[in-house]
Length: 137
Ligand code: 5GP
Image (cartoon, helix red, strand yellow):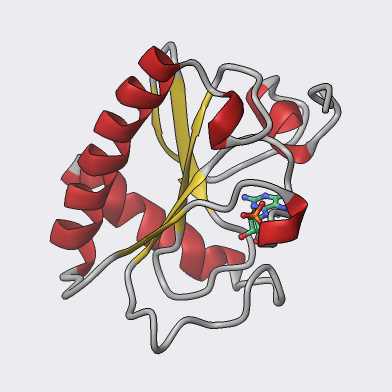
């Protein structure tokens, strides 16, 4: 399917919508999930326009996963996470709701995750987690 450049994450990348950012470079952005499935739920996205992991050029995927690891290490340190769920949904059939490829980092257990994209989080509390993660990067 053609990439929809009006999707929410494309708009965040263009600065048209706000996001609580924790990391940014020329190729990747990491920011807090607005409806977290656990405290500290963070998203990492390549800036390359691609809908799913399957559409992403391999070199971009390889670079992005390095940043996923870097942010995961910061989450572990900042929030004393005992475990981190790395989740990537490719395709609406898998439950993907935003059609720009992204990696979820959720400091929690697969057995304790909150419902997916179900409830707005407390944005002040989320910003507090973001500050801690940024400080650990
Ligand atoms: P997906 O279902 O595509 O794997 O995940 C999309 C994620 O984006 C969900 O976890 C959802 O909570 C999050 N999300 C949806 N809209 C926004 C938004 O406007 N800002 C942020 N920061 N996250 C969003």
